[in-house]
Length: 485
Image 1 (cartoon, helix red, strand yellow):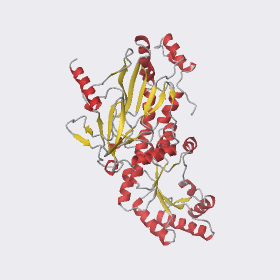
Image 2 (tube, rainbow, N blue to C red):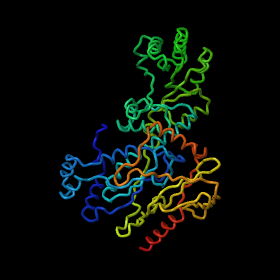
Image 3 (cartoon, rainbow, N blue to C red):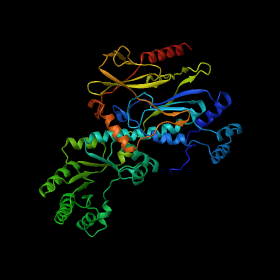
Image 4 (tube, rainbow, N blue to C red):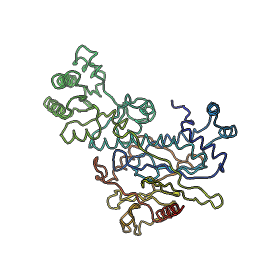
């Protein structure tokens, strides 16, 4: 699977448009495309960027093999001169991106492609596929982790994921979003992340009785002895048998370092409270109580409000599929075309009757504005790449949809950081993707820059994404021009 050729992982119309450009336009006409999304998933106050490493691998290996060309020829819609061009196709452009693990917001470019139009057009589908999926799962995970209030979250949704790739790269994204481990062994191998797990009900059922099953498990895994206690009767059988095994381990001098029980059914709040008392009364106050069973951020939050005694969570289906919000919604839109004579970029805009679908034109970048005193995010500013700012000078921000709403930041009270980094220059990769666990650490720091009001699960405060005055004026001018056509 890791050697799979993804060159034809594209929509047919990308290739038919490529042939149209090949026949009707300058093949080297340089354009700018922005990949962005319009609304935060899950009605969240933010999203987490993930999937860039896979985009990089895809671009590096983008090459039409002979079997690819033969297949395209068999479709009988592509001409031989175009197919001949594809034999030597390589990506030669520039790519800028928000680093993985970054907090991001609607309408700002996640990825910016500056390349000959045929190249920029071809890579649209794959970029969106990779960024949309992993950003969705990373965002979902960060919300689940927030609801758990510091408890460990383990991802174990592989068997419910929509296929192997969704399971593997979903696990990767879940680690970026904050999970402490995954049950997915292949993901552990590929991305060097912790793998974790206990045992299934079938383990218990395969033995003559529950106690014998627990005893055998404890002997094999004394330093990772989490026992599933709900196969028969949680409080009358499961917990008492687990306590008996723990008592025997202690009597035998076995260190009780990582031990406890797992609940997988029933009223988790009620059962965890009862089990906690039973464990404490038996002298095991540090025994872990973990839980699974169709969990998501809303159920975990509710259980926490109810005072449950669970401190470790295994989250599967709802996380790996983002069950309540199955699509991220990223799009890829033309923003500018380069004038071959001057080298300047001519801004392009897409109009729509839906205000949110009107695009932001031009060659852009993003500055994040932090409150100097707290380090928290005040706003994001989308501007043109040639604009500069002085943190010692006042900065006037305004809502691009309601421009009369203004905020003035005094010099010295804010800090600015450019969010987009170069990834490819002239077709060569100039960016080294960090290890997944390093991205996870970076993501945790990024989430700490959000105000609590933005992270809450219900009706979060939305971070302002503003346009610079120069970009705003460009957009309005283009809109005025279009209205006169």
